[in-house]
Length: 109
Image (cartoon, rainbow, N blue to C red; front, side, top):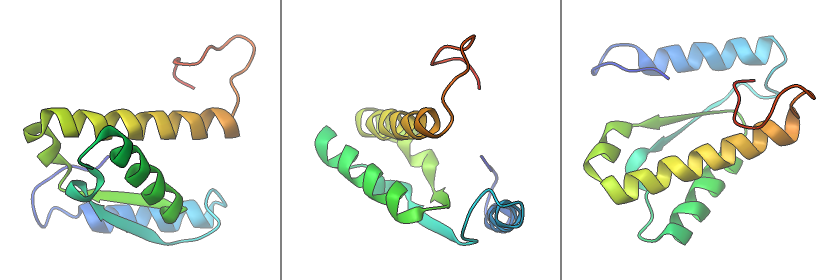
């Protein structure tokens, strides 16, 4: 997560991380996809889940969410987006990197 005001270099840092991940073989592609936070917050929980899933699948690499601070001003919708992002990323992590016998879901892997 990169934070900072305009011109702080967040986009440039995200581009560098994307390039490094590709060079290390972590990502098959070296592209950075960008989406505005407002575009992830659907009118309903079902729409939010669909949009979040769609954007994560479309990205296929590093997804940069711009203006995420707006979610604090959208308590219900912002929380829905965060819940769906967390669920999608957790499902992905567990399906690609199952926990060892001594680890349980929810622990830091």
